[in-house]
Image (cartoon, rainbow, N blue to C red; front, side, top):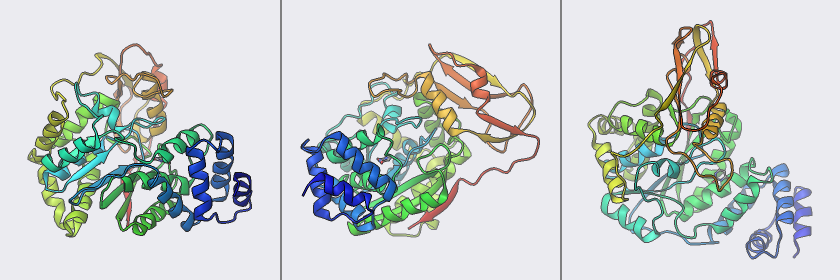
Length: 421
Ligand code: URA
């Protein structure tokens, strides 16, 4: 077997066997296959796709490349394919755990213009996300939930390949995304997995057809490994909620856990939580909605959030945000037609909320808080957003250009497009 033949086979759109894929992945991990040949194969996969059989095999090989977590009880996991202002996990995990469903969540750091749960949590003074697998398991056993960074040596093959995809323009391949996400989810030991699959300008999947294809292949991979996977296709054309930026998002998550959150975030969290609990407790999601809403209103979820934060060493009273606040005013009256999630995410990154390169230090305190959302009426001169900044100044025009204001009434956009099982 040799790598050149395998690249050429994929160039001819032929199906690779499991042993060929094993040869490639193991060879790339042990460095007998160099970056340039792996890149060529990844590009051939991006252009010519993979069959379901190849995608399942690739997932299995990456899953078996490192440690796997096992639990003695059922655990539910949630994954988001990434968005702007997406603080869902911070609300969802304690909420679900507060109702008796155990959750082990391994989060990631910000990527590109999208934020990451781990960066957000680290804006809470003292919060430790770098815990071992044993510590994570113990926390889930004792208090029902844990939120940690990539702990242990899970899926090292995916880690190495993902880093290469990131710099070779080969991220946007549905089979590569599906195997990358699912190998990590399977290694994390959950029996039920709910995926918040973001669709729109600010997301990995820009249109509903691609999102459906990704959802279906992830569900099939789950089935192949005996796991329940449900994908919820959600709107990521405008940022979720109002706050974008780490500490600002944690504060908004806390407001939401006290029943004072933005409507779109609340709607998403209530639906995802009901789904997760329904999978775990084997009851229809519809009958859970009310108890989830109550847990959000009566502070049950917030109590669990405080428990998680204090278990992991954090101090909830210490979440500083930047004190230099610039108000952005609407240039004309009308209705907000669009708020570009992509542009807002990029601006937040420029302020220091995200990284431009892997080694950049982020500033947890900066970001943007919208004061209007799509569908809202606005008067000329009214504040549409607030920029929280320390050192970096961005032209006010760059922020106002993220907003499209029209003379005509605009309906509130649909948040949850569909649920695929
Ligand atoms: N997230 C992942 O974990 N992998 C991908 O390929 C894309 C998004």
